[in-house]
Length: 209
Image 1 (cartoon, rainbow, N blue to C red):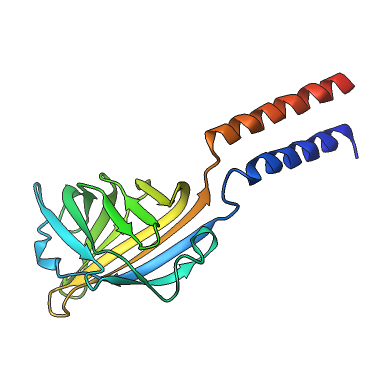
Image 2: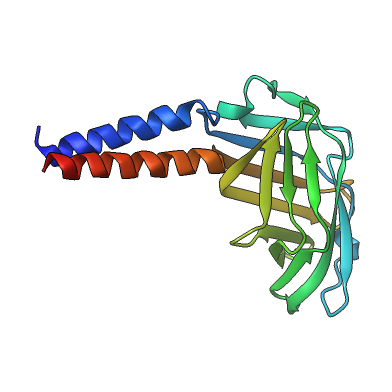
C-alpha cells in the first residue's frame, strides 16, 4: 500500500473513531399519513387569501415506515400524534397554478419526543384538478424549511415530501402524506476534533517524507 493510500485509511479510521461516540450512528425515514378536516371551500385564490388545515383530526396517524433513529420508538402501524394545524397564505399565481406558504410553524409532535417542524415560509405549489376542478392539491416546493429532532438531538433533513389534498366537501375531508428522511448532524466539537485529526495526520505524513 503506498503512502497516499495509507494516509487515506488512517484519516478515515480516525474520523470514524472520533465521530462514532458523539452522534447517533443511524439515519432513517419517517413516513406517515392520515386525513384532514374540510378546507376545500377556504381556498379562494388571490391576494390576501388564507386557509387552515387540521392534520390528523382523529388524534392518530398511520406510520408507514420508521427506520434507523426512529425505531423502536415509533411503533407500527399506528402512533399517537397531536392534531396539527397549518395556516397558509397566498403568495403568487392564478386560479390555474398557485403558491401558498405557511404563515407559522407547522409541528407534527409524536408522543415519544419525536417532532417534525415545517417552518413558517415553507411554500406549497397548488392546483385544482378533476373533471370539474373539484379537487385541490398542494405539494411542498423545493427548499422547504424543516427541522427534525427527538429528545436531545437534532437531525439533518436530507429529503422530504409533503402532499395534502381535498375534494369538494362531500367526502368529509381530505388526506395527507408526509415522508422525511434524515441523517445525524455531527456536534461542533466533533467536527473540530476531526479537523485536528486531519491536521495531525497531515503533519505526520510530511515528517515521514
